[in-house]
Length: 259
Ligand code: NAP
Image (cartoon, rainbow, N blue to C red; front, side, top):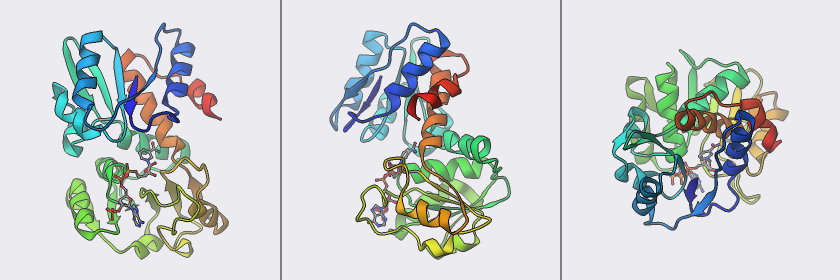
């Protein structure tokens, strides 16, 4: 199941039910609307009802982190959980967002972040996951955010390879990860001047609704390689599937489910 609020339009049930079917597993995945403040009760319900696994989205990633028995290293560093798995009687909190992003960048875009300059725009939950995992993958991580204080906190997740820059530094980055919420509605400002992103650069906009943000459109027209957030969504779901079932995720069936 997945808990969140709002949760009605989540793609996760589509992805995971396609995966269970393709893998021949008699499992089912449902979306459960859980209001703010209900994270601990949801974890208790998972424990009591014997539910095999749980995905977690806003606003519960921190609340679930406080309610599970053990945090895996990624989740502990971020203080946020997007997946709960069972280990005997214990519930383990994982975070597959950042590893899912790095997998999508490597597998779908053919870009290895090791030793490369990567700019993350934003310092919220998605940005923090991206910063940590890009640094773990060996990237030189730059962070630009509207609120400078949170940019420094987020950049610290990258250790010595992290720094805070102005968003105009995009012109020097080989990979730009757009991790703010700007672009979800048509009247949003652009998070970065798109003239700063062009040929020879990769732009990943973590937004997937809409599937093409104005920033993606202009950067593609400038010659950049672009991708939306569906790759991260798919790969983080694959990692969750394996955490729960112990088998490799049928990624082609999952990808086919949402195109
Ligand atoms: P969040 O924690 O609320 O963070 C929002 C970020 O956007 C902050 O850095 C915030 O800056 C910035 N921001 C918001 N309004 C802004 C504005 N008007 N001008 C400049 N910056 C602004 O949200 P989140 O969970 O990280 O999600 C961010 C985006 O990532 C969302 O679009 C979400 O859909 C997407 N996402 C995608 C995936 C995926 O699998 N593809 C997973 C998670 C999230 P301040 O710090 O200055 O407030």
